[in-house]
Amino acid sequence: MRMRRALALLPLALLVLAVLEIAVFVTVVHTIGGLPAFIALTAATVLGLALLRREGSKGWRAFRAAAEAGRPPGRQVSNSLIGLTGALLLAVPGFLTAVIGLILILPPGRQLTRRAVERYTETRVGSAAAGDLFGPRHVRVHQADPVDDDITAPAQQPARPVAGEILQGEVVEGEIVR
Image (cartoon, rainbow, N blue to C red; front, side, top):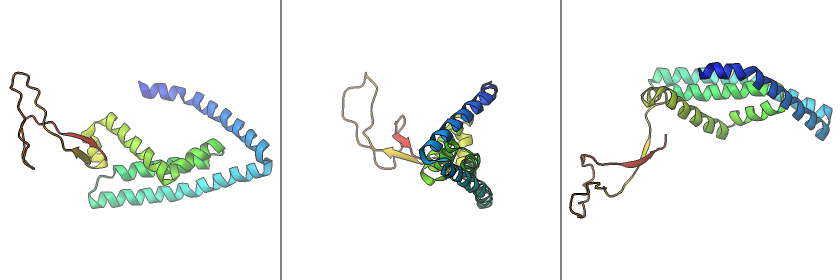
């Protein structure tokens, strides 16, 4: 149902993008001149086309290496898809798409986007399937005193557990740090 709505809004989104790209291009032409704007736009498109081929083959090699090593390939797949999307946005003529493409190509933007894709995928397919795709979670555990929620028990200081000891009903506070 959501996918149909998104596909129904796609023509409108592309129209808005085209209008924004034209407005930005006109602004850049007025700022730096017509020839420099055209050269910058052409350079970004040529760079995007060159990166499309590089990112595609790099992603395929990373996927095959992960599959041959028996590692979950999800991280390599999401990383290469983000790189391909960035290269494609660079290849599309326009300054807005070029800026977004550069953000997706450069390592900080790619890493943030990959984490967002992994979180989104985990919410859509569940944590077990996401673990198969992206590998096991890494958890940072915070050491704290056990909390006893039993109101009827007399107030007493609980004994500190021995390291490695498993207690029934113990709650471990932590955060997932992937």
